[in-house]
Image 1 (cartoon, rainbow, N blue to C red):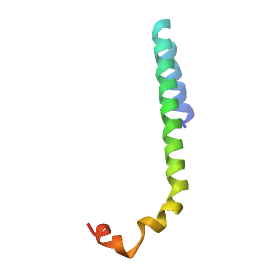
Image 2: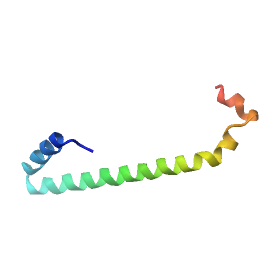
Image 3: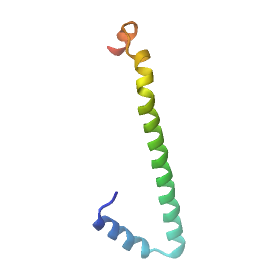
Length: 68
């Protein structure tokens, strides 16, 4: 999350734009927010599945591949 100084500076820049550009900025911010939410879900899924896969990934037969 941005600190107050960055947020204030960004708001000033955005309000100085023409109306049609403000709509573009809003769309871009929505895109970034959705992408971040998607990445959070992927990270959470990977973290949740790691214990289930640990037995498969960490075994003596496959240790040779870990060294590479």
